[in-house]
Image 1 (tube, rainbow, N blue to C red):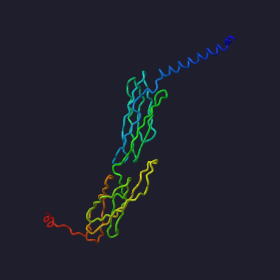
Image 2 (image 1 turned 135 degrees about the horizontal axis):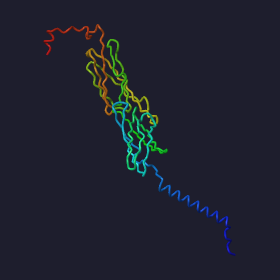
Image 3 (image 1 turned 90 degrees about the horizontal axis):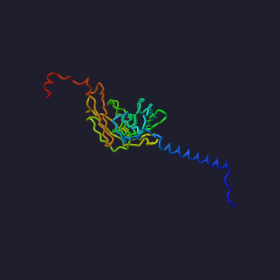
Image 4 (image 1 turned 120 degrees about the vertical axis):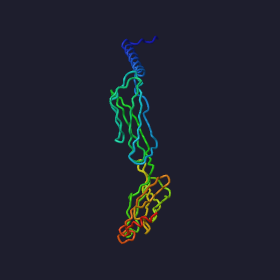
Length: 264
């Protein structure tokens, strides 16, 4: 028995199906060959790594450079940033084929730790190009004192206390003080653990107890605190003697001209 030939209606359906498949394949090939893709190409992520600073806030800068690799001009509308810590200004401009678009970015570091921000370059027609900038802020000096200067009244104060903080576990400090001052520093204690997810550093604390002897000078004295790897600080100490004390400025005899000539 010979096989039955397909009916005319079925033959038409098969023909239309082949035509539709061919059109789909042609569209896919055309999309691959002629779709522009990302028309501005170049560096899209920059990490400063560890950035050391003396004090906050600290600003770092970087310029992204993107080339128009297409065969037609690209119109840049503007650029935006994900947070107020990032400054970026990209005016509306047209980038010709082969030319470059420079995107200068300023990242403001306001606290120690890793800062990451995203910038988006908006193109005419709805295109978007994401740019990422990051930095790890590391203070050169992690020592902090409170108060930053002290006043000691010997007749009233046995000693005054100065709180010292550090964000990393410090070694024993080296202390230099003006003669007449006595400084005792208590051992370091961890008062707060680090929380990396919240970008909160640890806090190590200690207390300096500052006393005064009768040999302390009448003017401002100083305490110099140095911790290896953490930095150094200078704390001014003003000593106020009571009126009846022999070292009070008002009770000291005035220098005569003869005494002045006798001084070397």
